Image (tube, rainbow, N blue to C red; front, side, top):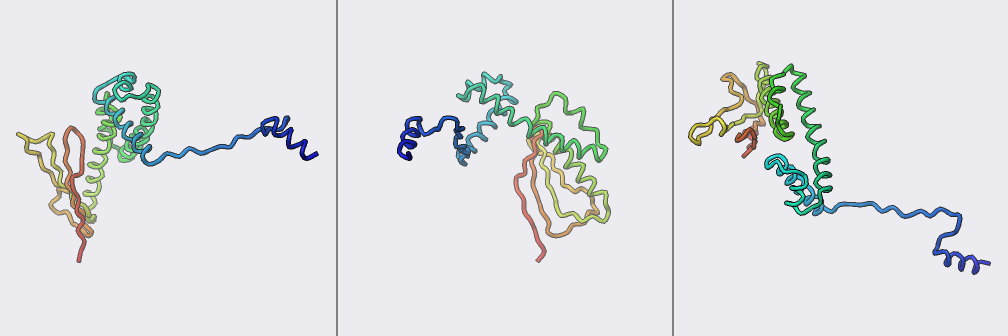
Length: 193
């Protein structure tokens, strides 16, 4: 009887009639190489979309991928910027700052995020300086190439109060601003010996 059962089992391809066949679910894992290739491709897609104003089809042709891949990449990028922009807008609204709302019209998500981030950092620095008992633990040298003259950047040191007090560990940063984009060039942390 067992031999007959085994023969029937083999004849039906290993599946008994009337029994549900369950397939084995395998999980898909990306390798680090795949992850970084995908991340770099999404950056290129975003740059082509914002800076060169190309359509999805043109981006797909330029990168050698399908139009569906470009559409998926843009759909993956959008929530990141939406979430970050909402975060900074909420932070600024809590402080009653409404100056930025007019500047955001017609800007790309990346430009909006950079503007909101810069405005929040300025407002946070001002709030910290208003507190007289506050000890600053950070000094920022800002080299603004947008407002400079003849290639020489306009230099600003934050905090710019004369009566500012500093505490350790003290972080000294150099930040360059060009085309409304802030890039930290270097940072040194000083500690008390």
